[in-house]
Image 1: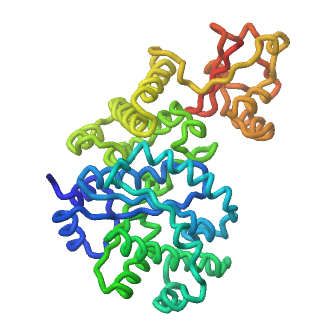
Image 2: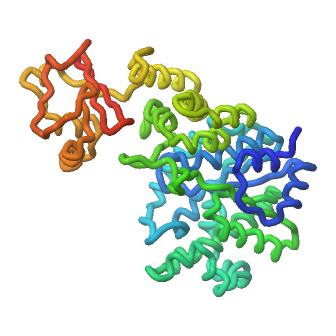
Image 3: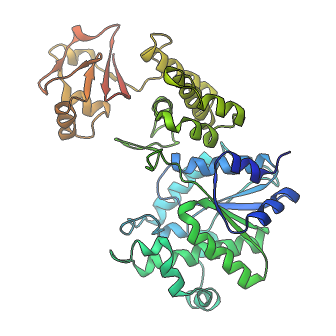
Amino acid sequence: MANIYDVLKERGFIEQATHEEEIRELLGKESVTFYIGFDPTADSLHVGHFIQIMVMMHMQRAGHRPIALLGGGTAMVGDPTGKTEMRKMLTKEQINKNIESFREQFSKFLDFGEGKALLLNNADWLLDLNYVEFLREIGKHFSVNRMLTAECFKTRLERGLSFLEFNYMLMQSYDFLELFRKYNCKLQLGGNDQWSNILGGVDLVRRKEGESVYGLTFKLLTTSEGKKMGKTESGAIWLDPEKTSPYDFYQYWRNVDDRDVEKCLALLTFLPMDEVRRLGSLEGAEINKAKEVLAYEVTKLVHGEEEAKKAEKAAKALFGGKGNLESMPSTEMDKSRFQDGVDIITLLTETGLASSKSEARRLIKQGGIYVKDERVDGIELTVKLEDFEDNSIILRKGKKNHHRIILK
C-alpha cells in the first residue's frame, strides 16, 4: 500500500509540514493517532470542514486513528484566525447544542467502533483548569513576542485583539499536550490558517514531554481566483440537508468553474488520480461531464447514494429535459391564493429565494429573477393559476438557484 503521505501529497492536500521526512517515515511504519479540531460555532459542519473530513477518511482507510476534537472549551474563547473582529460570544447551551449536531454528522464519515476513531470534547479538560496553575505550567513556555508575529494575531493588532482571544493559542496547544499524554497522539492536522496554533502545540509537547510530535496543514478550499469555496449569495454550503438541500448541494458542485474541477475531484472524492486527471483534462462542453461526476460523487459522500441520484435526476430534468423534478427545492402553496394572483415579491420571500422584500426588489431590478425561464422585468408581476403547468411553476434566481412552487 502507498504511504498515505504520498497519497495526500499527490491529491493536493498538503501545504506545510513541520518535519516532512519524519512525518512520512512515521506514517509508513506504524498506526499513528492524529487529531483535527473543530470549534462548534454553528449547528452544522460546512464545506470548508469537509476537506478536513476527507483527510481523516483517507488516513483512517490507511490504518491510522483519527481523533475528531470538538472545541466545547475553545469555542468559549473564539479563534481570532482570519477574523477582522471578535467573534460573537456563544453560550454554553448553544455550544453544547452545536456539538450534538457535529457528533451526528461525524458518524456518517468515520468509523467510531472499538479501537477506531475517537470523538472528544476539549471542554472535558479546559473548563476545569486552574488559571494560575495553567499560567505557571503552560504560559511560561510561550513568548509574547513570538506570538505577536503569528499571522492569526498580526492581522488583528491594528483593529484590536482582546486578551480573551490571545489565550486561544495556549488552549489549542494544551489540547495537543493532553491528547499526547492520554492517547499518544503524535500528529495534529488542520487547515493552513491554523499553522501558528499547530506550531504552538508541537513546541509545547516537546518542551513538556521531551518527545517528538508533528504538525501538518493542508490547503484551504479555494477557487482558482483565491476565494474561499463553499459560499453563495444566500450563505454557506452546509452539510446538514435541512440547511442546504441535497439538490442545492449537488448544484453547487455542478456549477464550479471549469478551472476548479480537477482540484475538487482530487480533494473531495475518492476517485483514482488517473481518472481525476482524465476528467480534469476534458475541454469545452465535455467538461460538463466531469462536473456531473464531481457533483454526484461529493453529494453521495455527504448525503448518500439515494439523495445523489435524486439530485442528479432533478438537475437533468432542468437542464437536459430528462429525469424528474422531485428533488428540486419546493414549496407547497394553497391553490386558492392564486385565483387573483400572488405578487412576485411575496413568492420570492416565501420560497426563500430572497431573504427580504428589499432584496427581492433589488434582484428583480438587476434582472436576476426568472419565472418559467422568462426574466421578470418589473416588481409589479403577479403569478396566477393560468401560469401553472401540471400544478407547478419554477422560479429561478440567477443561473443556479431554482425553486418549484406546487399547488395543493
